[in-house]
Amino acid sequence: MKIATHHPIVWFTRRILSGVVVVWAAATFAFLIQCVLPGDRAQIIINVTSGNVGPASSAELAAINAKYGFDQPLVVQYGKYILGILHGDLGESYQQHRPVAGIITEQIGPTIILAVAALLIAWIIAILTTLFIAGRDNIWSKLLNDTQVFLATVPPYWLATILLVVFAVKLRILPVIGGNSPVGLILPTLALALELSGFFGQVVQNEFTRVLEQPFVTSARARGMSDFGVRLRHVLRHAALPGITLSGWALGKLLSGAILIEVVFARQGLGGVLVAATSSRDVPIVSGAVLISASVFVIANLIVDLTYRLVDPRIKLT
Image (cartoon, rainbow, N blue to C red; front, top):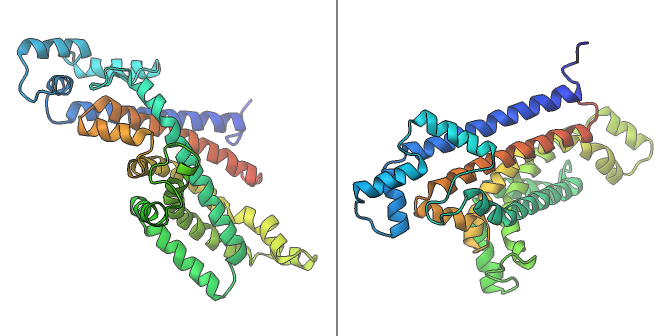
């Protein structure tokens, strides 16, 4: 019996396989980072551990090479690296001498919370502004459009600095360093969400304006439905589809952006860990973060595809 290509099982299998390919490519890239960076890896580990920048002895280098398998052929190293990932082993931190998987697991929670919160706030801002202003030829609509373009082009770290100075230093409404408390989450979330709301707002607003001219909208209004009811119940569902498509990419972007924002606001998360790992050339942590980010990106896109189908059931799974 031949299964149609849009069958849910076939669709899900294809998505899983494509996700595996993406994660494998990220793992390969992470492995290559460790191999092609300048400097002897054994020497780097000794320098990080001892704090001494001088050359190590041959015996010390040989011991480190044997411990980490650096003296084996690259093909063997690569095979062991991939096998370790399949067993949840991302290597050991040069600096902390702990499993990288454990370090990232401890720190990734606040980063994911910040990224997801920013995604939700960005969507709320984009939807509310679109519902009330999009498709109307007035000064507020033009102001909204200009504001969205401006927000979409503003670097989040620059916006984070402005928010920090205004609301924490000058007005003292919010704390400078809020830790991981709900209050401390407000400014970092806004710093990420405002830029993204500009992207979502532009995409949704353009589609919203186009859908307003469709016959089914005119028909709904002819049946006596209010303007806001038409916008909310009929137009928004169709106009949101392009924005939903971008949500998977947006979450990946937010994860990388959250790392920078965490440094600005001195928040706990992957940001501080990656800054320390980069400055000390703790490559396993950096490559582990790359791999985890790729995995989150794959999962986010799978969720987006499912959401896309739920919003508009007419769309076939392909």
